Image 1: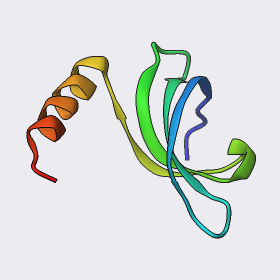
Image 2 (image 1 turned 135 degrees about the horizontal axis):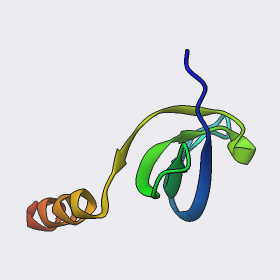
Image 3 (image 1 turned 30 degrees about the vertical axis):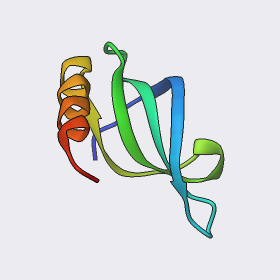
Length: 73
């Protein structure tokens, strides 16, 4: 697996937390020194390990917000 680096530049919020302490978070993350993207994924306590997730540009996040606002929940 290729090496990669990341920096959490802003912790936006926690969506949920399981009994093992892992939490699903929305963060602004710079991957491999690139411009930060909004990121949704599971993190271990202390953010030492991460699960699979999705990274979104600001434009994609705005589109997602519009879709969610249009949903009847």
